[in-house]
Structures are given as structure tokens and as C-alpha cells.
Length: 346
Image 1: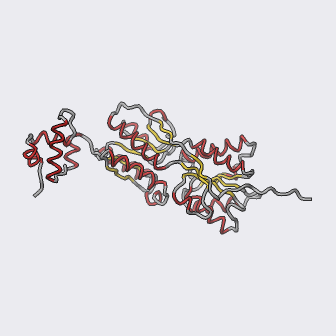
Image 2 (image 1 turned 135 degrees about the vertical axis):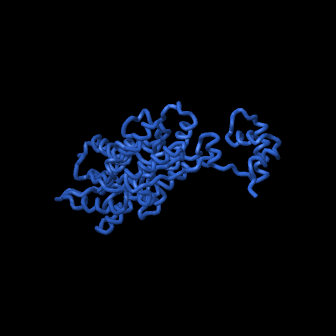
Image 3 (image 1 turned 90 degrees about the horizontal axis):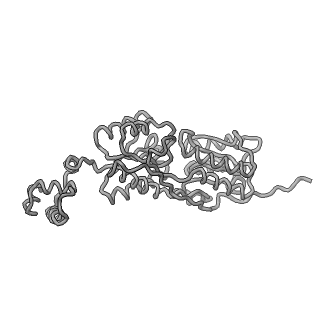
């Protein structure tokens, strides 16, 4: 037979209402009483019903996590499991569960978030992406519902708790690495320009070229999906140019794998013919042949900080919005090398 609150109250020598208050972590219950009741609960194998507990303390003890577009595509990218690992480590420490929200379209995503907010299924929401003019962000702001973003909001930056890297500086530094190796024809392969991270990394690429006095050419910028197939299409376009690039800045490690495969199919070797640098430092980046030189954005820490920032907001709605910048560093591997100087023709 299942153990009830009344059974626990009897063993602990307190009223059933006191047991309910201990479960809800009521501040007026003394530490000694809490300890006594929790000991009885443990000894009897009593586990409070999650929905009963949420009614008692008006908390669902769960956090909604919103993936970009459809989860099947997102989860192909090792960035997302790693950021989820960071989120879940904090959730576990603070007794929160994670509820994943996915959808094939922006409309489906918004409907999923609306259901989470209106049904009180979550105490707060974390968006694992930042998109220009995102209807979900506009909805959450209008509802005054606690949320945080992994990435930089496209606007109202000071009103939204967000965790990000300095992607402009990261884009600039990784491009400068290719310039320092003697490359002058450097292309940028990026994802959708609706994503703030792509815009920022490309801005850094542009700044590095301008500072080095190199041209910032339209035909050297290709935008495609953050997937292997997209990277392959990008390479075909670039290699067909009259002056193909000798250096590539690719916005994401997973796309870089597609780019490297396509270069190989076209008879180009990395780094002998084309040097390639990337972003994120997912675990696959050191397994590729050659291993990728990439910006380590500390994905796990992005997840940890996003969860901490949100839980602080959930516990105190007056908590001001925070901008948390996670440091990055460049991991030098073998996908980029010094450009060989061509000797002048006699």
C-alpha cells in the first residue's frame, strides 16, 4: 500500500499540514522539524507527488528548453547535447526537471511555448538560439514570463538575461589567424542570417579583413544551413570562382565536416590546398581528418550559466536582466597552415 502524508505525519509526530509545508519548503517550518519529517519520509520511502507539490508551492519545478526548428535536425549537431548537459547539471543540483519544446516550424514552436506558459507546466524557459525578431521572445516579454537565451538577443538586449560568447571578437580572431598564416583570399561559410550568431561571427570576419586591408567580397560569403549538405553546396559555389579562396572561415564545426568532404571530392586537400577554421569545438572537431582548428566556445559552460541565470530570475522576479559572457579560446589543430608563397614567374 502506498505511503501517505498522514502516515508520515504519524511517524514524525506532527500534523499532516506540517508535512505538506515541509514538502513545499515553507520558510516558517523550523530546520529541526524539517529534518525530522524528511527523515521519516526517507525511512518510509515516501516520495511527494510532483503535481501536489507544485500546487503547494505554486512551482512546477521544471524548466522549458526550446530548440531551434525541428529537434531531429538540431540534435544532429553536437552543440545541442553538450549545452543540454550543462543545463541538466544545474537543473539536477536545484531539483528542476527539463521539458523539451520542439516543432517543425516557427508557428509550431510558438504554440508549444504558449502551452507551457498557459498550463503552468514550467517556471521558466531557456531558448537555445537567438533569432532576429523572434515571435517566441516577443510573446515571453509580453507575458512577463521568466526566460533566458543562449546567444545574444537581436534587440531589447538590456531586458533579457542571456549567455553568450563575444562572437564578433571570436570571428575576428579566427579570421586573423588565417591572415597571419599568409592567406589573402578568405571566404566565409555561414548559416542563416536570421541567426544572430551568424551575423556576429561574419561581422568579426569582416573587421579582420578590413584591418588587414583585404577586400570584403560578396562572392566570398555563402549562407546555407548548419548541416553537412549545406556545406557541400557552399564549396561548389566557391571553387567555381575565377579566384577561389585559399582560406575558409566556417561558422560551425558540423558544417565544416561537410565542407571538408566536398573539398576532398573536388580534389582539394585540407590544409595543403585550402586552410579551414571553424567554431564551437564540438567533440567531432578533433576526430576529423585533419582535426579542426576551431574556436572553443565552452558549450557546457553556456548551458550552466543559462540555467543559473534563469533559476535566479524564477526565484526572484525582480532580479535584473544579466548579460553573461563566457570566454572563448582558439584550439590550434591541423586544418590550417601557412600559405605557400608563389614565386614570381620569370
